[in-house]
Structures are given as structure tokens and as C-alpha cells.
Image (cartoon, rainbow, N blue to C red; front, side, top):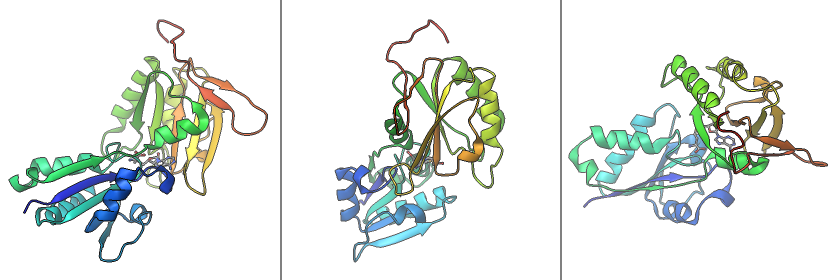
Length: 254
Ligand code: SAH
């Protein structure tokens, strides 16, 4: 019997941002695999096996889930946000490519979720209203020089930039260096949004500028959006200012 593996996006926060498709899949699964902090967000159902693992063990976790599915089980493997954005879906695909032929015959579904960049953007207004890109600042899986090249290219091409994985205890200096790099290309008044734990009880959203942006305002649960030259801030009485990027490009190049 050929099993079933779903790679499920949990969204950035609580159940309100979990799709009905993802909720139904989690309910029906015989076994759920995932990083412990993500598994904690899935309601416990009796008779369902749960396999929590360390965040660094993506490949091993994907292989274990594939083994289980190949034995005929309905298996779900969970990611925060969307599973295809700096997350498990690519790890599962890599294991399928490298693994036994039977893994390619499995019924595989990737169930999308709301990625952090979209959740933070929604809280701030519409910073991603025009062309944008997403970059992970983690240099665990790629050299720092490549990250700097991509920051230069993105800023000079006029993209709004969403920065995932901005900082961690093991990577304390990368965000400060990245902001310095962006200051070479963009005016100090460029809007910057810090969105932390968006969609959860301890959510915090702050709007600042590139000149004032302070790396100390970010942690592992923060996503940062750096505007383009066209991104605007609209102050409002009370609450977070609106940040948006107009739908039409104002200049031929920025
Ligand atoms: N697959 C996830 C991203 C995993 S990388 C997604 O699609 O969102 C982990 C990074 O995502 C964190 O370092 C942070 O930059 C961002 N992130 C995840 N959840 C977040 C949230 N609720 N609020 C703000 N940023 C979040």
C-alpha cells in the first residue's frame, strides 16, 4: 500500500490563520512530525502519534516522515507559516530525490500557509504593494558574501525586501551588517517594519526608518520589511503608522 505524506503550513500564529484544508489534514493524520514549537500549536488527538524534533534536523525529520508514509500511514509534517518558504517542503523534496524509488510513488501534498512576510505586511498596511523579494539572513546554509551580494542587488533594483531569520544567539551580528549594507543604497528615511510573533499573543509591530532601525529590536521571531525608494509612511492618530508601496512605479529606476 502506498502511503500519504502532507507537508502542512500552520501559518504564522494561532488557529485563525490555519487554512481549513490544513486543519482537516492534521485531524485525519495517523502521525505528525515537526519541530517541537510548531507541534505544540497542533491540537492533540488521541491515537495520533507525534514526533517532535530539533529545528536543525530537517533532513532527518523529512526522512523519518517518508519512511512512515512508505509503510502506509497518513503522515503530516508541519512548518510554521508556509512550508515552501525557508521550511520543510524543500527538505522533503530533497529526500525524495535522493531516497529510494518507493518514496517517489508516495502520494505527496504540500498544503500552503500564510507566510510571515504576508502577515507582517498586512499589519503594517501594504508595504509589499509593488515588486518585492524575500531573503533569509541565515548564513548557516549559504555564505555571508552571497547574502551581501543579494542585498546589494535587491536594494539597487528597487525591490522592497523581506528579511527572514534576521538574528539569533548564534548569529548576533548579521542583521546590523545587513542594515549597514542597505544604507549604502537607500535613503535614511526609507520605511522599515519590524513584525514580531505576528498572529500570536505576544505580537509586536513597529515602524521605523532605515536610518533609525536598531538590530536590538529584532529576535528570532521577527520578520523585517525594508521599503524601496517608493515606500511611504502615513502617520495616523494612535496605532501603528500605515506603510505602503504604491501600485505604480514612480521612476524608471530607483
Ligand atoms: N516557513 C516560515 C518561515 C520559516 S523561517 C514562513 O513561511 O513564515 C523563520 C523566520 O520566519 C523567523 O526567523 C522570522 O523571521 C519569520 N517568522 C516566522 N513566524 C513569524 C511571525 N509570527 N511573526 C514574524 N516573523 C515570523
